[in-house]
Image (cartoon, rainbow, N blue to C red):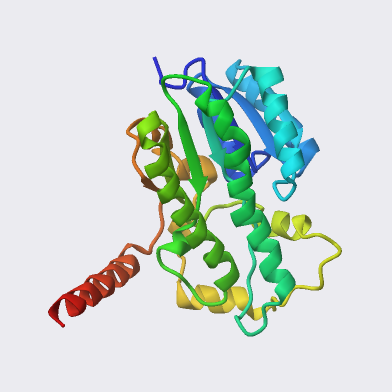
Length: 278
C-alpha cells in the first residue's frame, strides 16, 4: 500500500503543467486531490479528469495565492470537501525575464508577491490542517533548477526561487520534531504553458514589464538547453513519490546543470577554505 493511500493532497498551480502532473501522481497512488489554481475553470477540468482516471475524490477552487483571504477560504473548502490535508504541494510560480537594469518595481513586486509570499501564505493557510493529521505528512515547495545554477536575464525569478529554497530548508528544520517532512523541488525545463500562464496572471493594474524579446535568447545562450533536456511534466516527476516517501530534503527532476552547480559548490568550499586559512 502506498503511503498516499487514503490521504489528501493539495496542489496549488494544479490546473496544468507540473501541478497537474503532481495531482495525477498523487491520485494514482491513492490520494484524494484538491486542485487549486488562479485559472478556476481549468482547475475544475483537471480535477474532473483526475477523478475519472484514478477513481479518487477530488475538488477544485479558483485561488489567487496573492490573496491571503482566498487561501484561508481554500483551506476551509478542502476541509469541507475532502476532510483535511496530509500533503501540500505549494507549486505556484510565475516567470519573469528581464535584464536587471530593465526590471521595473512592478516586475519585482509581481514575482515576489506570487512566488515568495504566495508560497509562504499557502503554507501558513494549510499547515494547521497538516498538523491536525497523523502519520504520513509532507510539504513540497517548488523552487527551480535555476536557483542552483543561475542564468542571465532571470534575476527576478531566480531571486524568488532562492527565497523559496531558503524558506523550505528553514521550514524543514522547524517541523522535523513534529514528523512533517519538507522537501524542495528543483524542476528543470518542461513542456508547459508556464510563460503564457505567467503573463495571464500579471495584474492589469501593473505597468508594462521590462522584459524584451532578446531576454529568452540571451538566457538560453548562457545556459543552453538541448531537446533531451526538456521533458513532459509527468516524466519529469517520475521519482517524486519515492523521494517524498524517503523524506529527501531536495528533489531534482532533471536538467543539464549538474556541472555548473558543481563549479558553484567548489567556489563556495574554496571561500570557506580561504576563511579558515586566514
